[in-house]
Image (cartoon, rainbow, N blue to C red; front, side, top):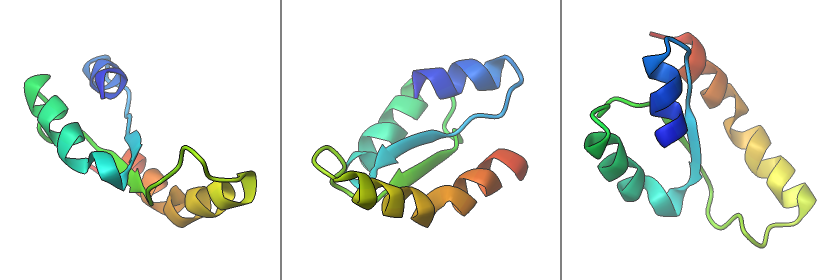
Length: 73
């Protein structure tokens, strides 16, 4: 979240990626950093022990959402 806020302050669109397990934590951190509307996309949890094909499927499931988050106002 820190990187997303930093890039946004620099005028560069950014989106945080995290697993669904961290939705609440991401919002708390965004609020604490003063950017309550920071863009976040959440990937199905868990990711730590996912195989490469599982990670590819998780990425495929959210890629359009990431692009939308970066290109829509």
